Image (cartoon, rainbow, N blue to C red; front, side, top):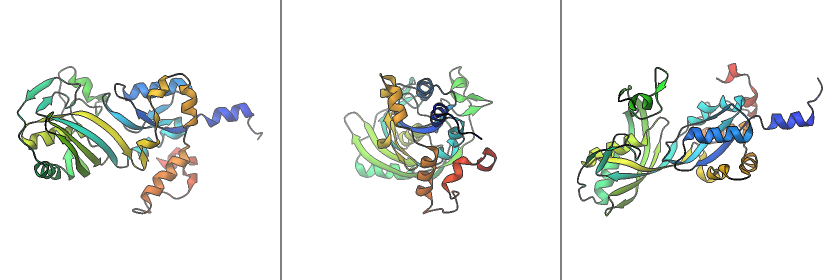
Length: 277
């Protein structure tokens, strides 16, 4: 078989890959995906874990069918978040996008009390997806039902909060900053609401930033805002990571604790779908 022309080889080179992007606040995850589709002229684009519009931080964007096949694997690692809780106020969505449903006085809190509260919410536990979430029911996201006044309660699933650390407490503004290291499927705003209940005053999430997902760090990301500026396409193309590179990073991060969990060999990305899914 003859070798493909140079122009065709270049097209193939950009037909697949993975990008680490720092999503800015005020932008939906889908809007970021849509922008990358437009910049690269490729329809098959997906992400390994959504972020709410008010949230910022690391998103793993997979481009091309060979890359999107691995979305589930990229989603499987631990997640780390910085989160800011507003104590004394509860909302319909458990975040700043909802309507206030309750206000309550916040008790005087010292470090010992806060740390003890956080320890109660660490470890293995069960958590149900909140009504305003992208979790699906009969093919539709829960938020689609919630916006129509229909609350769908999903079965609680096991999650784990590996670490829940106090970062700062602003007593004047009654805002609590924590770092959360958790398993896939954890809703930090549900965790925030639960912490508020334990403290007796309620709470909702007002700030969220994903700083890590598996071995990938937000410091490795390109700016999502820059993709909407001039020459955003050039910036994107210069930041492309190969599927093999990403899989190698995943394997390197897991092989020491579970050597049989990840197939050996960098050729994994070239296997047929039947052998990898």
